[in-house]
Structures are given as structure tokens and as C-alpha cells.
Length: 281
Length: 325
Image 1 (cartoon, rainbow over the protein chains, first blue to last red):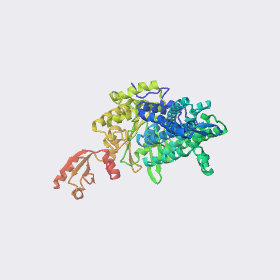
Image 2 (cartoon, rainbow over the protein chains, first blue to last red):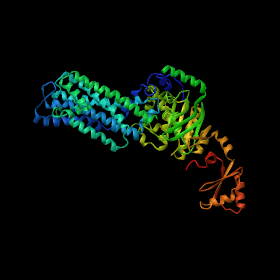
Image 3 (cartoon, one colour):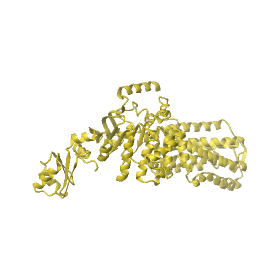
Image 4 (cartoon, rainbow over the protein chains, first blue to last red):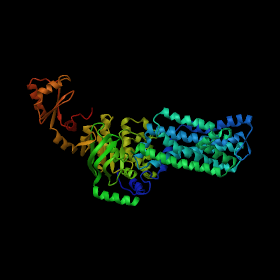
């Protein structure tokens, strides 16, 4: 038995394949290794936490959609059609749960790994790059988001809350939304030093959830307030999902997609920079 | 840009690093804002050598290790690892290295064997290869019976051995050990030293930082003594002792209030004398002889001890301070 040998598939040979290529100093092309790690850790994690992420939007839907919805009756959507209140808020709840899941994963989980688990230091002592770590961690959050979105759809569809076939696209839509939030969230988390500061994140999230056209159309706001809300990511996410489930797809739908594409690219750049600044300085 | 850069670095490699030079540092410097952690140091590490960085806490050893490990960017000077520049080719260099950091940073969500496995996956190693490798490493670390235990339930010595085993998963050419035995009991230390000797026999280049002189003497072929970011001396442990210290040392204690007074009257004895708060050290060829002279002068030390000179004495001579404060 020898502890050293030089085989073709040695760590060195693997690393040198990317030698001199663009981005070789921050990307090794091994996001899958981070996902595999997340899966190994997931096998022993608490199923209650996993379940809670799924149950939350369902409870909101039951309480507001069917409870409050019985008093309200219908709402007029963007195209002027009347839809049931439950069908109106269901896509908003889907968008919100995508946001919440992504933010939870990219703030609390990442914060813990950064400061207590020292997991990223360990990863970055290997031939992984910072973008591998960022993509892997975010990718795992997205897989979870995907599972939640599919679960929610399975409940929504038979209740008649997805009138349009476009609604199927609300699942990848939720993943896109989660991607955007997670990319930015991980970068922001890198600035936070303690648990008190972590609460600031909730301080922004809750009002955004309540006032971003989740439960009623923005038309009740004065123009200036409406414009501020429309610039916020959650409103963009809700409109995207609502367009899809209600089938009111148009150019504006594409604009929402573009909004998240920009958020993802910007967020990944920001997070990768921050990881380098923290762990490779 | 990629290609030009590659050629340039190969040129640099030819110039600075013949095949047997693993690490070359010239004027290596690391500054944090206005604090200089490493202050223009020069050294080389050859293939198969066991190279030590000895110095007290804050001497710049760990920072030097991090720069070699391509997890900290140098701010001045030159550094090549196997002819590569760690500031630009981080992931590639890290593939050559096994890193054992000062504090064990295992993945506490995973079991012992999973920690080894996933670390190998980070290097992109294949599952089949790793399946075999993990068994080998569990044997090496004497952790076969703990393979399915979550890491946070392992003892300090076991965690340390797991960290070293983990550092070997990519079959590194250079193993970097930052304070490998700090916090371990004597038995655990000796098990670990034994493992490290075995690696050395297999031709792995070791780079070790320590503030334990016995560890440095046991493990290092050659070392640099660092203090305040600078190199104070360089050489083989025995040569350094020969150069900077006498053959023997006599340690005497008169009680903390009387040491200075006694030292003043005895300072002509031996080759050299060091007065520490708790004891006086006499450097001499023959320690017993000095002790007799002390008795003859009418002094009665509370305790006395004659021992061989060690790296601790070298450090004391060079800096006027002890290693472990």
C-alpha cells in the first residue's frame, strides 16, 4: 500500500485540465461535489424543518384564500378577468415561499457554515474555487425550492387554482425567483457578523411580503408608492408567477424574467467576490 | 491571455524551481492594513524534505502557511509552489497540497468516513477511487472502528488524526501541518508523530509549524526560526543548537524573588547566562561542573537540573524570549 502514487486521475491532473482557462482561479467546474455534500448532510437532517417550508404556504392559502376569500369573493386580474380570491393569492404565496426558502438557506444556513462550521474554509483549502462553492450552495437551495414548488402545485391544481396551462411554467418560475434571492442573499450574509444583524433581513422581508401585491392589487396605492413596490424583487416574482398561473402572459412576463436574470448574474458575481474577500485574502 | 500567462509561469518555473525545489520564497511579505504579519522572508523547501517553521504565537508561521496553501494572497515578494504562483493559480496549487489546519474543521453534519470521502470529491476524485482510498486512510488514522461515528463525537486525538488523513486524500506531494499536535495528550502526540514519520519515509514533503521545540527536533530535517514576521535563523536542528547554544544547560531556581540577585553574583560562570523570571539558565560544556562551582560559592539552589541544549535555548538566545509564554 502506498499513500502516494501518480495516476492519470490524480487530483493534480484533474485540476490542471482547467489550467489557463478563463476563470480558473475561481471556478473548478465542480459544483456537483458541493451538491453531493449537501445531500450527504441532508440525509441525517431534521425532516420537520423540511416539512415546515412546504406547509407554510399551504396554511396561508387555506386561511386567506379560502377563509378570507369567502368574504371577498372575486378579484379582477390584470387582463380584466374576474378570478377567485384563492386563485389570485395562490401564485403570490408560491413566489413568497420561493423567496423565503432561498433567503432562509442563503442567510441562516450560510451564516452558520461561514462562522461556526468553517465549512467554506475547508472547501477552499481544496482545489475548489469560490464560484464552485457559491453555485453549489445556491444550487442546493434551488433543489429544495423546486421540491416545495412542485408540492404546492400538486395541491393548487386539483383545487382549480391554476386556470391556465401556462401554470406549469410557474414551477421553473419559482426556481428562477429562488435563484435570484439566494444569489444576492449569500453575498449579503457575508457582511453579517452576528445573529442580531441576521434579524435585519426579516425586518425587510416581512413588509415586502405584506405589501408587494400579495393579497391585493397595487392599484390602491398612490403612484409613487406603487413605483417603489414595483421595483422590489418580490413584486416582480409575484407578477411573474401570477401571469403564469392565470395565463395572462405578455411582454411584461418576459420583463420579470429578465429582472431575475440580472439579479442572478449580479448576485453570483457579488457573492463570489465576497467569498474571495473573506477566505482568500 | 491564458496561454501567455501559462508560458510566462513555466519560464518562471524553469528559472526559480529545479525539479527538486517544491517551494521557493523570496522576500515573501504579507501586510494587513498597517500590520506586517510576514516581513520579507526567504526560504526554499526541497522534495522529500521535512521543513519546519518554529516560533511563538504571532510570529507569522500560520500566515506563511496560508500563503503557501494559496488561501492567503501575498502582498509582496515572490512565492512559487512547484513553479506555480499561488496568487494566480490557487485551485491548481491546492491540488498538490494536503492541508492540516491549526484547528480541526471537520464537516460536523457528516460521519467520519463521509468526511474523507467528500473531501476527495472536492478535488474531483472518482467515487470508485475514493471508496478504496477512504478505507486506506481509515486504517492509516486507526479510525476503522469509528467510521460511522459523526465527527463531533470523536476525541481530540481522533479528530486530529482524521484531519491528517483527510489531508492525504488527494495523495499530495506536500503536506502542510499547522501546529499538528497542539492540545493533544502525550500519547496521542506520539501516535501522530509515528504517522508523520511513515509519510516522510514514503517521500511526502512535510511543512510543519510548531511552537514545541521537541516536535521540531523530532520531525524536522531543517527549519527556520521565526519571530515577528522575520527569520531569525535557519538550519538543521542539531546545527542550530551547536551554533547558537552550548552542549549542556544547567537550570537552577532560587525562588522568584532571589533569582535576579543570585544571577548577578554568578554571571561569570559558564559560557553564558540567561535570567528568566522563574529560573536561571547557565550555558556550558559541562553543566554539573557549573553546579559544583555554584555550591562552592556558597549558593544553595532550591532545585537544579542539567539537560542537553534544545531549540528552546536557540530561540531564547536569538530573541531574548521563551517560545511558550
